[in-house]
Length: 282
Image 1 (tube, rainbow, N blue to C red):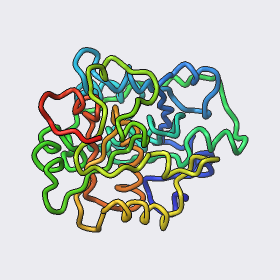
Image 2 (cartoon, helix red, strand yellow; image 1 turned 45 degrees about the vertical axis):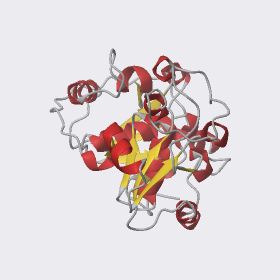
Image 3 (cartoon, rainbow, N blue to C red; image 1 turned 90 degrees about the horizontal axis):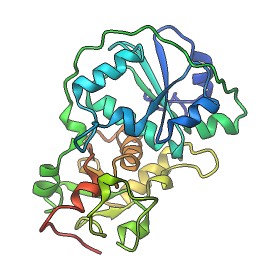
Image 4 (tube, helix red, strand yellow; image 1 turned 180 degrees about the vertical axis):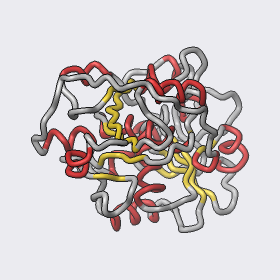
């Protein structure tokens, strides 16, 4: 899949051609930013998904003032074309894309396949760290249509109101409540295993090609969502543990398939699985 299919998805070839364009800022987003310094896409700047995009004290993503300050430090203005890629199946970059979309940033793209595709193609890496001039980024306003809050989940999606659907983007083992993926982070402790009532399971990495981590062809993506009850007028809420994998699936549904009624539940199972007296299925 290439940038010709959907504007918010660009190819590695596009990135190689346009990374140095005026008005383009390339950001590598990862859960462990140290890898950036071993080699990165030339001209890219590092963003640490946990430290830079989350609040330092409370649970949750960075608020509007914090995000504006971060973007300003990165030399980003509201008209800068921000291009995102990363490791870990591009999930952290997709999460950054969703967060920037939520806060209404305009020119915004995700690199299809992320760093994996860039490296598979043998494209160059650099250890030079750019030093952008700081920019003035005004405090943004959220776009609520792409986010599912806890109240949305409890009042509309878990009860299964007509015209709604829930997609659990975790592994089948997590969905069935038999185990966890990876090491628990502090924001995940005290949660119970299982899934939300009525949720259908679609592991986020199933929408990617195994070798290149690019998105699968559009007909395959459409079929995957349709098989899980997503119809053209269905409002869908997607969740995982911490909203990084669900961001990838949200991107596939909202940006690639073009399903405008898709919401990412950023509280994820870290929040829902810790709530008292809410329904859980296994």
